[in-house]
Image (cartoon, rainbow, N blue to C red; front, side, top):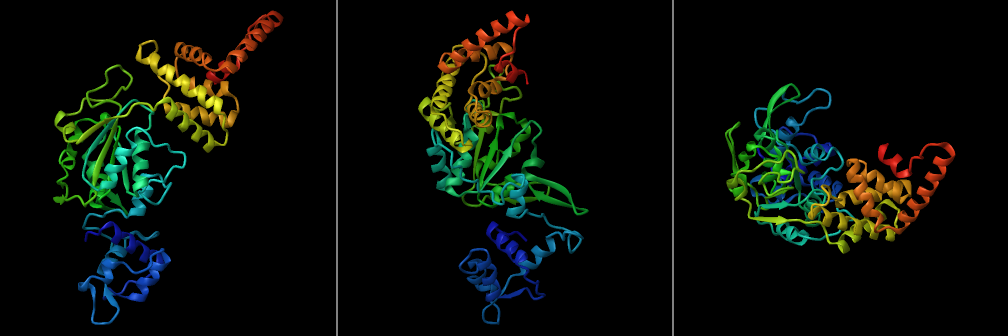
Length: 412
């Protein structure tokens, strides 16, 4: 028995409310109203009370046979399933699936609104597409750490749309995406995958880092056509509900890695790529926008330094120009600037915060980045000059150089 998302949610609420299962599957309006009120609803759901086929001979009493099925398929915390078998595919409830997909952080697949989010770039376009309800697959590409995934999730949050985020790897296959047989409470049952769940619930499917996929991703070709998909393991055709759409993120355009920075990315099938309506290139934010982003992050972490925010974004802009010109092989991403803001809130020291962010790079790159940062932050230049004087003094007195704060942080 297949249930819609709203039906499943209300039946879950009945279970939580402790409604006793009736043998004749009949429930009076007052019982339904009590469940609705307890969960913030003004009235019992219309799919029960306004469906003439559910009305019984008794006034104000409705037939809800799905509730008994739901209870029988819900595992008992101690003894497992009531009926001991699950002959039909078992769809996950919204709350259970949300917990599985978000590591238990929230009980809804609608992303939380971020107070520190700054909309820019293609945010307006993505939000319009998601809010429209049209099936319009979009391929969003851009360098790492510039906010592609966050932009899509926040568009879903603003539009109050469920977002099924699937992180793609080379090992991702049809079983992961469409569903497969699982061992649940000692029984082998078929569980729908996130792609099918998104289709059935008319939600947004986010395929993150799709250019890491192998040819196994081709199972999604019919999904990208918007017509539906045949789940051959159980012989069932799944038709997408209204509102279903697909967005994908990638560091490349599906043509493979060009400069060696994104090891593991693959060349995607051209027929597969052609099924996306549009490709949107997401560059790093302009300096003015990125400064707003960094200040918001500083406010979030409770340590605001407007001069430091200005220095960081100016520095990042210089490193990106140097990268474009081939002078350096690495780049300072927006994500790395956000990490510096977090370190600054903890250590309350600019140099230590920047040093921690640079520790992952090789020594030559660190030196190049430090040299560039010194060009924009006078306080660091003055601090370095004083540190150099102290090191010379220390070497004269003790006969060996003294490690700097930056060196200590970067080797920790």
